[in-house]
Image (cartoon, rainbow, N blue to C red):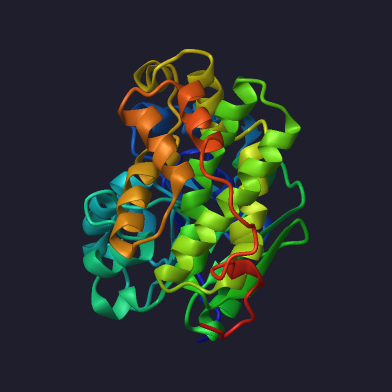
Length: 350
């Protein structure tokens, strides 16, 4: 496929969508940024920044903020979807009639759809015309939006079964401070990006309870094992979880101060309820909905995921955070090197 020309549409003006629009211009392109809220659209146009989600970050003149989906994707050969996972289906459905038949769609959302337990590219396969759905690519990796917007060094991964398509987007979107790798394991990349958010809530709880660095390291390590077990059961490659979309994103989200999911865990450990935390922020912690979907996926696949289960009980069943972590610590001890120790299993083995 030849490199597309014309503007790149970025659908969603949260922190991540705004940062990606800035990155498009840094890579030499022009971006149309679709802003859902009329009030925010006016602010972005008049201030030249996104004061709700990325205050203080100047938007280049090559970023055009628009309020119409049709206007956003007009003449756009590449469309980046950066909306929250729970609204992706509705936005994609509204967007579909306006897309060029040659459009390439990049999913930058990290989550699982609760109702159908679907990954984001699976949602797009259900909502976009089939001729377009086959050209969807997943973008994931350790990427705090603010640092991308500030042009701090970042590495991410583009996943598609079409290696040529991923390489085309790599050329189009990368810059010296935004390094992109390509990957064909879409399942693993999307699951890594979604599941690490649940583990970040757990890490925030552990840090909020002041359990220490040893406990955090153990939680991340065992959480990575849960991610890999579930991912492989769902068709991912084990080694993907040792890469940017797995271990890389897990470390960032579980330890970084900009992590919304970790901040939620800290708040829960401090005595706030989920409802109280959500009422005090515009930001969305994707790990909330993903936790419930992950538990259901694991049950369907016959995979044991105690950390995901305990996070879900804290969020939705009112279980005290200290009791949830206590339940994890009380689990029966067993050898670490198990037959299903997937991260050490050679590629291609069963």
